[in-house]
Each structure stands twice: as structure tokens, then as C-alpha cells.
Amino acid sequence: MKSANPFVPAFITCMREGYNFKLFRTDVIAGLTVAIVALPLAMAMAVAAGATPAQGLVTAVVAGFFISLLGGSRVQIGGPTGAFVVVIFNVIHQFGYGGLVLSSIMAGILLIVAGYAKLGKLIKYIPYPVITGFTTGIAVIIASSQVKDFLGLQVDSVPADFIGKWTVYLTNLDKVTLAALGLGALGLATIILCKKISQKIPSYLVSILLISAIAYVGSLDVETIGTRFPNLPTGLPSPVWPEFSIDQIRKLVPSAFTIAFLAGIEALLSAVVADGLIGKKHSLNQELIGQGVANVASGLFGGIPATGAIARTATNIKAGGRTPVAGIFHSIFLLVFLYTAMDLLAFIPMAALAAVLFMVSWGMSDLKHFIQIAKISPSDRTILFLTFILTVAVDLTVAIGVGVTFASLLFMRHMSRSVEIRKQNAINEYADQDGDNVADDSIDIPEEVTVLQINGPLFYGFASEFCDRLKTLEKLPRILILRMRFMPYLDASGESSIEDIIKVCREHKTFVIFSAIRPQPRAILQKAGIIRNLDGAIAADFDHALEMAKELLQDKDFLQKHIDPTENRS
Image (cartoon, rainbow, N blue to C red; front, side, top):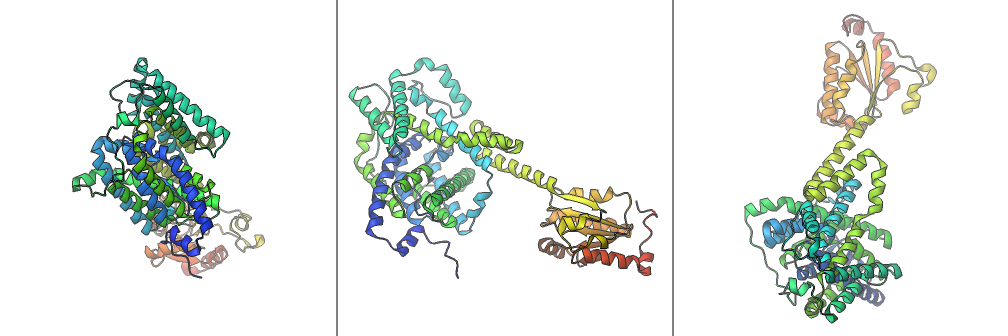
């Protein structure tokens, strides 16, 4: 049976399976429901990132459409998410909005290449403490960025760095606008109350409508979307290819990689969650391709980076969405809002959006898992807090790089500790260790034979100790048997250490027998020429290695060639 084509969008798959009016009706209802939820979130995410509410809506329309049309998940809903807030803010701050557009396009191209290169499965190798650490760090940064709007602080500017922000906040508490604080607190309470009453209530939308109505009717003097962004567009802008230079591309490469990395991780995590809810499997690589096209298109239309949104995807599923048509209609409804409702959106107080973002940050923080990971082990706790602190205090790109690198180093340390090289001489160890068909009463290891068993992969984290272990022997034997049945992996460093072992044995006239070499180590040793140039032998298993050793010790020519172990063999 042929495997399914990994590069077919879920939209095409659903159409081939058969699409009927019943599915169409539920998808339209789900699309409208998600659009109502996405409307305030798209604007809030854009504002938090230093962009405009309109750019957030454009992103939800354009990127959301292509993620649903070309992605590998049946129910994924795409748009701007909290994961990008820090990166977007930093790129706009350093390179302007033009730099962000170029970064988004570059990230999209990287995702498309990753999809066609079938790199989707590599996402699962990102350690969970790293993901949780930077996700919680992002949540803290988002919440911190909204304190000014929530309190209505009358300050000209707020620094980009975390410490600088809170320094400004704490030294300007006398400039709090009570009206903004009251509206923000009421908005926050409204969201919490709606969620407790029923998850089906669009709590974010209810909160924003209520706070906007109170601010308008009461003519409250608070900052709104309209006062901060006086020139909101009323429609979808035309696509424009950004101007760029080679030097600018070079400077934006780290940001593009970070955006692509975050988009890939969040999209695939969201798709996995969706799979569990609907009982279907998504295409990892096609999802990356869809995300890539979506980010290129978002950049061309003047949007911001986008990815799969877990909360909106779950809302889509709960509302009945079962095919990508629901996501497409989500974008269509948002497009209608973009053309018809921008004048009304201008009345939304910034404190209302801040309340929404506080709740989004709380949901992102995943405090339960954060505490759980912190309790598991010292190494996981170290990775978690290191990534979290670097995300908040330094930079997201640095946090991801350092977190993954440190996690890899700790993993290699744990693996090296799991590797065991032991000298064996007890009769009952062999059958228990690897199941070789050697009866206890038939095992007889001559004094002139030493057996070293390697348990675990021999790689660069432990290879240097391998030769040192041989040197710790009181004397080198006539014959050395290397038991390799439980050595599943060998890298270049391990191969080099084996070469060193053979060299030492050759100098001391010690004959080496390799026992039960597994396929991967055998292939490495063959490519390195060790097997071909070996001054020794290879046995299929330990039983044959012992028989070979005994026969050699009875061979007079062998005994003459290999001096007595007691004569200068230390």
C-alpha cells in the first residue's frame, strides 16, 4: 500500500473525502464564532507588539486564510499570537516596520523550505522545559507591556527592556488615570466572570463591548484605539513587495529564524492538540508549508507574523468546525469587519485591550506545568529557569539558543553517565547481561584474557574515557575481548577512541577480538578502515569470541608472537 502524499493540503483531502451541506453549515457557524473571538485578539496582539490594530486584523484575514487553505491541519486557525510579540516589538524598534515585513517574508520562505525538506519532525526534539520557559517568559513580557495602558499612566514613553519598564511604572504611580484603571479592572472581571459562567460566551468580545459602551456613554477621558491610531484604514491594503538590501537581509537573519522557529513550534503544537480533539492526523510538513506561505502573504499585505493559534483552534473545534472551510470563513468574516467596523473599533479603550492581554498572558504562562517541571529534576529546573530568565531579561533569540544548547549539553552528560565500560570475570554475568547462549558451567575465561563490555552509545561525550579505562588495567592481557552487543551507536569520537585502543594493544602485542558488533558501529568501523586493517578478529557473539580466544592460547605460533602478560605489559 502506497503512503499518502505528505504535501497535499488538508483542504484538498477534505474535498476528496466528500463535502456536503451539513459540513458547510457547521463550518460557517464555527467560522463566525472564531471570528468574533479572533477580532479583539488580533488587535490586542498587534498593539502589544508595537504594530497597529489594523495590521493585526490584516494578518488574521490574510494569514488565517492561507493557513486554512494550504496547511496540513483540518481545523487549524491562524493569526497573530503572543509568541511573536517580543520578536515583533524588537524588530520594529530596531529596523522599523519595513524590517518586520522583510523578516516575516524571510521566515515564511524558511518555513516553506523546512516543509519541503521534511523537517517537521525535528520540532519534537525541542525540550519541553525550553518551550515552557520561553512561553512563560513571553507571557510575563506581554503582561508587563500592558501595565501602562491598564493603569492609564501618563508617561511619554516606556523603555523596551523589562527592568526599564518596571522602573518607569513604579516611579510614576502618581500619574495613574483612575478612569482607565477602573475600566481595565472591570474588563478583567468581566472576562473572568464570563469564563466561569460558560466557556461558550465570547468573553473577550463581551468585555470589550461593555467597556467601550461605558467609556462612550460616560464620555470618559481615556485613551482609545482611535486616539492612539488616528488613521485606521477601512479595507485590505494592496500587496507591496518591500525594498531591501543584502546588508539588511543579513541583519534580519536572526529575527527571521526566530520567527520561523516560533511559528513552526506553535503551529505544530496547536495541530497536535487539534488532532487529539477531532481524532484526525495532520501533515507536519504541509502545515509548515502553509504557515510559510501565510507569513509571506501577510508580509506582502502589510501584516505581521502569524502562526496557528491554540485557543482559536480549540474554539473552532468546540463550535463544530471540522474542515479548513471553517478557517476560511473565519477570515472572510474578519474581512467584512475590516471593511465595515473600523470606525466603531476606534472607540475601544486601550485599557480594555490591556485586560484582554492580561488574560491571554495568564493562559500562555501555563503556571501549572511550569511548577511541575520545576519539581521534576535539577537539570529540567535549570533549563526551565535559564530559558525563562533569558527570555524576560535578555532576548528571546538568545533564550532559545542558550536553552536548547544547555539542554543538549545536559542530555549528553546524562548519556555519558549511562555508558558503562566494565571488566567482566564473573561466570554468571554473561547470560544475565545480554542473553548470549553460554551456559554457566561452560564459561571459562583464561587468566590471559580480559573482557571489556560496553553498555551504551560510545560518542564524544564519553569516548575519551574509553581508552583511559583500558589504561587503568593492572596489566594488558594476551587477548582483549570487546563486547559490543549493547553498544547501539558509535560516532567519529568513539571510532577514534577504538583506534587508540587498537594502537595501544598493538604496541603491547595484545590481540583484540570484537564481539557482536551491531550494524551502525560496524558500518562506521568499516568506513574508517579499522575492520580491514585490524590486527585481531571479529566474532559473531561472545560464545564464539571465547572459543576463538581459547584456540589462540593453544596455538604455539600465537604464543611466540604475543609475549607473556607478566613481562613488561603494564
